[in-house]
Structure formats: structure tokens, C-alpha cells
Length: 353
Image (cartoon, rainbow, N blue to C red; front, side, top):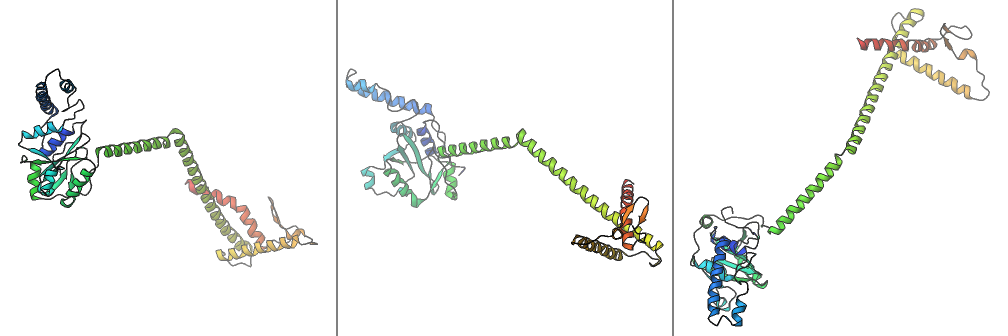
């Protein structure tokens, strides 16, 4: 497809694009077509002057040219005279004379189509047909089976179709496509549709950029920064709490070990070895169960509490209110309470090291 010459629409120069796409090269410019148009105007003026320069027909003819205008439009006469330079002739495809010949369009080489002052070419290159309309973004492949339907549709829409008779100049695309066939996955769009699509994409891109700019604004940035700082603070608090819990568990373990050693030294009933952690756990559970049971008894109506059942502690030592010897549970609880702070201080000192 890259080898096919295809001029895209510029202004109203569709006649120029039609001729160049037909001949597959930059053969004509607006200046050359204007020269042909002026030559036709002069020839027509001379013929009209033969009837008298004072006649009404002559004065009407002197109005602006019918072969061209300032927008770049050129008439069929200009196109026909331009093709005569290459020995080519135009025959009206819609005419009854041509239709009586019953010529299959596939056997032709090219067509020129016109509707509402727009010209475009349909040409066979190699063994395939292409719509070379300058309003398209690229050549459009037309199958042999669709060609007749395509031309019939143009006729139904009001197009004038001309058959180009004669030998077209050689071109690279025709030679290349004689050996290979091309396939077209996507039909080319009209230039207006392509521009509308590009404008839509540009508008969407602009909207997206505005949204991103608003999202990256100072207010939004400050809010994100505050959220980040709060998340970091909460994370540090959780880490500190975990560290404190670990310190507390380790302090209790150390205090239990210290209490176990003290009880082994002071009590003749215990063995000379340290109590195991399982034994300490069982004793703590028994102590708390006893405390819970005493609390339930105290909550019952008519219950009288005795001072000896609630041990107290003081800075001077550990004594029961009745002077009796303290139980193992009392010693354990008191030892944990006294040595907890000492153990935590020891841990802090170890961390500093």
C-alpha cells in the first residue's frame, strides 16, 4: 500500500488530486490546471464573440469563469483537456450508449467520479481495484465482486461516472501489484472522521491532565502527607506496645525465676533445685482461682470478712495481719510485685549495652 501514490485533500483542489492519483504522480499543479481553464475560457469567448460582442449571450458569458473558481474547483472540461495530453479520453459511464455495450467494469482500467463538485479516482493497480478518493486517509481496497455494486451505489447517490479510455502511464505501484496482492485489515477513514477522532482524543487527554493536576494540587498533597504521618505514628505506637509487652513478659519470667530461687533457699519443704516453669504456672493459677473464689464469697449477703484472709504489703516487709507465716502463694505474689520493676530496669540496661 505504501507504493500507491495518494494525494490527500487540500482546500478544494480535488480535481488536481483526482488527476494525480489517476496518473500516480505529481503531474499537475493548480497553476497548470488554471492555465488550461483560462485557455478554455478564451476559446469559448472567441466562439461567443462570433455572434456579436453586443449580444446578451456574450455579455452573460463575460461573467466569472465556469471552468474554475477561486476555491480551486475545476470543471470536467479542464480535466478532459488535461488528460488529452496523455492520450486519454473520458466517456460517460452512465450514458445509454455505453450501457448498451454491456462492458463489465472489471475489464476497464479506471474511473473518474464526480458529485457536487468533488472529483475522485477509482483505478486498477496490478490485479486489484482501489478507491483513491482524496477525502480518505489512504487508498481503499475494492474487491472485484464489490466493484460493480460500488459503482451502482454511486450512480444511485447521484454521482457522474466517467470511464478513462487509453493507456495510462507506467507506475511503480502497478508493476509491484502485478506480482503480489495486498490485504487490507482496516478500511481507511474519511479525513473529517480522522480529525474528529484526533480532536476527541486530544480533548480526553486534556481532561485527564486537568484531573491529574487537580489530584496533585497542594491541598491534596497536604492531605496525603497527613495521612502518611498518622499511619507512621500508629505503626510506631504498635511497635512500642509490642516492645513493652515483650519487656513485661520477660520481666515476669525473670521475677518468677528469682522467686523460685528465694523459695528454695527459705523453705525447707522445697527441693534444692529451682522450680520448673510448669510448677510456677500451676501455682499462679491456683492463687488466682483462690482469689476469685474469695471475691465471690465476699459478694454473697451476710458474709463477714476477716483481716487475715487479705494479705497486705508494706515497705517494711511481708506480714499477715494475724502474725501467721505467709503461704507460698503470698510469697509468690509479693515477689513478683517487688521484683517486676527491678527486672524491667535490668532489661533497659541490657538494651543500652
